[in-house]
Image 1 (cartoon, rainbow, N blue to C red):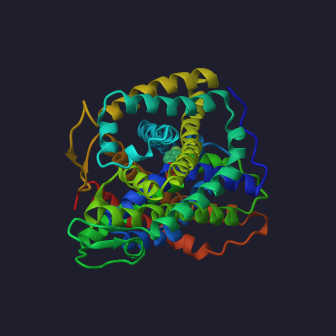
Image 2: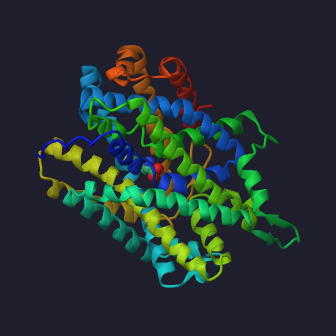
Image 3: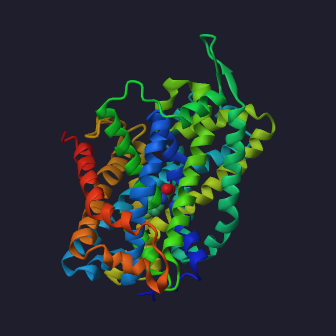
Length: 462
Ligand code: PFF
């Protein structure tokens, strides 16, 4: 068994590491496609409200439990209350499920790096290019394996800290590139077959201004459900990860401030990714193209890069490299959690566990890749969406397990050990906790009730 990892050097080190886990494909790939599917502005509004309330409550709770118990998720819940050990086990399942498809999407990013570095940007901008790629049998598996190998090597060697050092440069760099592409996509315009001209500014309007036309209660609940699942996924909460990160935070760090910074960074990254992708989708693909789903970014971005002219190829290379980095810091955090827990449980070395884990996920992720060709089928999921294998994994983790874990965490903290357990932790060293009142009401009453409603809806029970 390895010794417990050293603590973060301070508030900044903690924020950077936690943001490295939080900011990833969830922000750049998942947020824009959900926001587009749900019509833009209304989803954005709901998401921001949820981030400021639910996101803050769940992040505070996870990090608070971690720092107070100084244990990883598997053992932390047991320390909070001896009867709640099962919740630690449950949290383990979420990253285990997410890992099956995270490396598939990471593989798609890797493929686009190759496409742009080999100067094939024009090809990639053609209609059907992405679909041809994911429906081919071998290529998606090969690229997934490359991404998984990179993740596994980092975890195998235990060099995450070395990688995280680059975060200070690459993450802000990624945000700048995203903003620049976003500004460019606002200048786009396109004449559709029927002669109408669609502009980037109109697309911006779709993204930012909520549209209540034809909104029904059912649809609205659907949007809240999507936004909530996205929030869990994006902040890496309700899956034990932030508990583990919290356990490495020194007692003198101002938790309130750190949590605020992680929230801001993660939400900004998602917002800007939406700004980059959604107006362009509207311009090139119209309103009908907005419900494209998981392939959205891979279909729309090459079109933007093509519009940029000769420089587009270069921008594409830089962009996909930076996204790869963000995706790697997140996938490393997922795999690290799994590896660390198994090392603890089976008392085996890091190297042995990482190897076995890499092999298991190579198999599992290959099956997900085949879900776009040999194993292709579509089922109607209980939340109303139509899905294939990848969507099923996504549904199970984000729409079922995470809400269950979040509800149970709220019951444990709100009703069994009482919110003071977390509040005292945040206020350690006389640091202020401005949203203390909000925290208490949310964790005890609002969050559990609303989450139960959403869970029932996700399960198709009303
Ligand atoms: N929050 C990450 C993202 O937005 O891409 C994804 C993620 C990280 C999920 C870590 C699960 C996890 F354990």
